[in-house]
Structure formats: C-alpha cells, structure tokens
Image 1 (cartoon, rainbow, N blue to C red):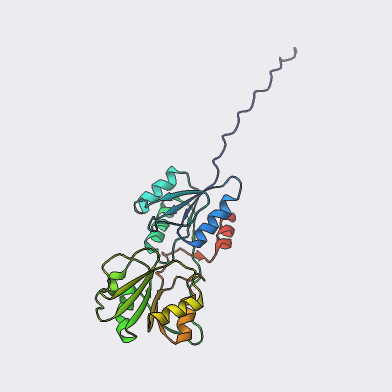
Image 2 (cartoon, helix red, strand yellow):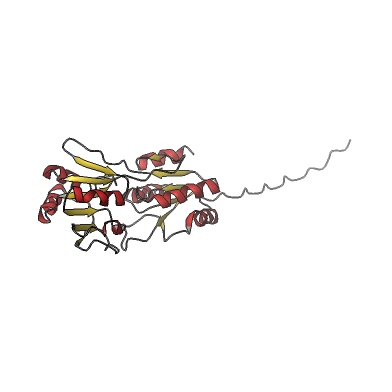
Length: 264
C-alpha cells in the first residue's frame, strides 16, 4: 500500500477574545467612590459609576462616569445589555429606595448579579433621647411635642412634609439649596460634612436648637451631630431607612462587595 500524502496541519482559528468585565456602580456616596477606585486599580476591569446629577459638584470618581437617570428599571436593563455589563453594584444612599428597587428589577430582567452596599445604620447609646419614626411625615407630626427650634438635616428634598409647621423655627442644613415648599420660618445652612463634635455643639447652641431631625444615614461623616445632641440632652427624631426589596441583602462595606464579586 502506497503511503498517503501528508497534509500540513490547518492553522487553528484564534478564539474570539472575551470583553473585559464591566461593573456598573450606582454611586453618589463615599463608599461608591472608594469602590470605584478599588475596581479600576485591577487590570482589565472596566468600571462605570452612575450619578443621579442632584449635586452640582460631586467628588472625583475613578473610572468612567455617567450622569443622569436611566428611565426606570426597563431603561436600566436596556443600558446594562447595551453596555455588556457583567455585574451591578448599588452603592447609593440608604434612602435612595426607588433606585434600589429599579436595580433589583433590572438585575432580575438581565440575569446579572446585584450587590447592594449599605453602610451600617447608627445605634443609640447611653444618654441618647432618640425617637425613631418611619417617614418624614411622621417626624413632622411628632415635632411640635418635642421642641420649637429644629435643626433639620434630612437633605434638600422632602421639606414639604414640614411646610405646614408655621409655629416652629427651622435651621435646614444641606449641601445644595433646598427645594420649596418649606416652612415659613426657615434658615438655610449650606455645608458639606464631615463635621466635628465641637462645631456641631456650637451650631446647636448658636441657633438655640431644642430638637434635631435626621435620617439614619449611618457613617462617621455626619454622626457628630448625634454626639453633640446627646451632650446637650436634646431629643433626636431619627427617620428609619426604607426596607430593601424582597430577596435582596446588603453588604456593609467595600471589602464585602469585593468578596461578593470574587465569588461570582
């Protein structure tokens, strides 16, 4: 039998290169900025941070940045598909309940993993006179029974809940000018944390504050007001956080997010 002619081996086709991991971070918090910096430092990872655009001068963020809404859960899901996102991180403010709900629905629609980052809430200590309430409206209902001069630190949105309290005097602290309607006796204090205990104590005394209202934002940047209120024996109305969507859990810090991502 004559030997069969040999054929040169066919060149192998190069396998298509996979796109790099693309992480979308829903941001606007200190933790979101820290997370973006950690992720962008990793070779081959694309990071996009989405900001709502409510603050005129947000802090610098590593990686790509987009500003503005998505158009609800469906718009977010479309963006995730179009941009070939591989993981979704919700690192928004603990009170951004609508964004978190949309993120959960979009993750379900696209089959993407969702990690929610929430800094732990504050806890009362000895000497605190806290009054937990479920909403801004409930805080407004309680205020007349607690004091007449209010330091309101719940942000620039939602002042309409207090607009009917015409006999109370408010000092409203926020990063950006608040939106009307607001109580008739209101003094706006534009400031950005972090704040120190001595400064917060001086502020409470200067404005003769006899009751403080805050959201349970957690974190050290604005917790000094609670220590100052405790030292002066003032009552504090604390608005509780909205619950997470059903089936969604949260991690407390950036390290928890990174651990969750590595396990995917």
